[in-house]
Image (cartoon, rainbow, N blue to C red; front, top):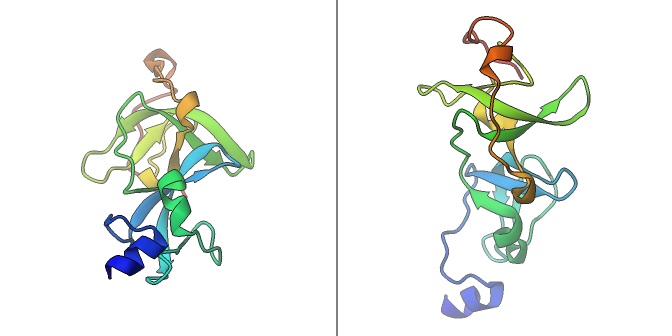
Length: 148
């Protein structure tokens, strides 16, 4: 077992399992994107994630582009959201967080609650604390509806 770990570069870190929540750094979007592990090659240590189906990510890349878990958002956090109408990631800020579900409301989709996994972290060099402009909120606090 020690020989196998040395050959695949596993220094004893916790292995990925199917269904694990993760975040993937997309060099295309320069952003961390929430994802889930779909498949694991236990011998090579490679994984497939749901946002890149069919693509095996080698274990040597994990430390650079995969992190465990989902971001716990806080009001004022800078974020990015894929806006389907614009077909691109847009910079935004978290306006509200539902503590019971983790869902968030962001200034790019005012009045709508989004699953926390649909909001991405900005690239580290781009990450600056966002200051929501409460005065520009276009109406009452968001209702508890979800938007895909």
